[in-house]
View 1 (cartoon, rainbow, N blue to C red):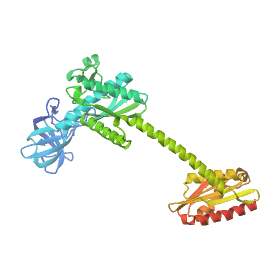
View 2: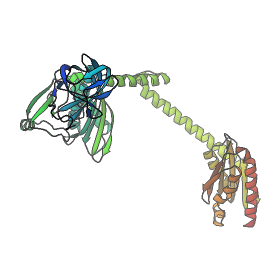
View 3: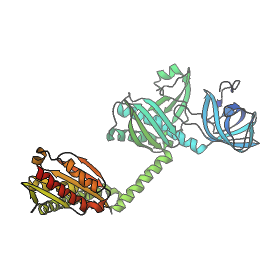
View 4: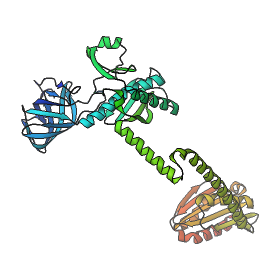
Length: 435
């Protein structure tokens, strides 16, 4: 940039007071090279002697808008500093041709700028609220100021609990409702420091600085654009708070119409929940609490029923088990059982036979599930549930795992479940006979 912009003076920034200007094109770049003109469809950079377009700085995003001349017009998609103090307007030519040294009309996207202003003043309000609630150590460490949205990084040693975050948001909105004046002025850096103005994160300042004051609660060095009163920020709604590093926190918030739309969205969701609960929006909490209690009671009743069912099923499976010596063999299919039900049932059956091996299976959705449980005395004699399950698992086309006491397996061939259980029975008889 220094080479191609050699001889180009610093841009005269008019954006604190004006949203449009009549300017002169002092340089044009395409792909980083100086050109005499940019034509329809081409993208490049336009440099003006004076501009209302704010170049991204201090966390505030750059302006967008339009630049037009008597021979063409271009959409400004972003504004950045090419060199500190020289604004680069990133453009795409929409019509005709714009040429070097032409007079140009420059106009920012006024609606977008206004939403950015709300967010930037919102960061100052939020900063003040954080310091009031958490302490003066909560200092800005970074920010992003966009249309309707802001992100604010600050130093703090712990997560904000709900009461702290609520207090910050409440105080910030008290300052908004206060509708205090927002003013700015230039002074010496020494005088600003003597006034207690807070310097932003890592910024370098010259001898002359710009101070932005919001009411009596905020005084900061800032080069950004702001609303004229805090009331123009609109509601400030905190949407998240979290850690971004050691002793560093980040708060995200919405301002203006974006905050209002967020509130409307939450209200719509609340009304939907209220409708589903057949109650009013103001009674959602109690209605939901009552619903959760009923659900918990039903789950407990269902759990008790399942326990009885498993106990009865285990009793049926073990009422007259096959035995080899003093050890029982229980091999059975349990239609419709879940893998957890199958596992619990296998343990109950094992406990009823005292000494033995239980292999149960079920078929769900065309897939087979198997579980094997071995009593502790047989584990002590070298029997392993992991080995017991391996054969049946192969029959259903799958594999399994576990330990000596309990193992589970599954396979895609549910139609082979009966064959797998029959194979398990044969294997267990041989295994126990040989012990």
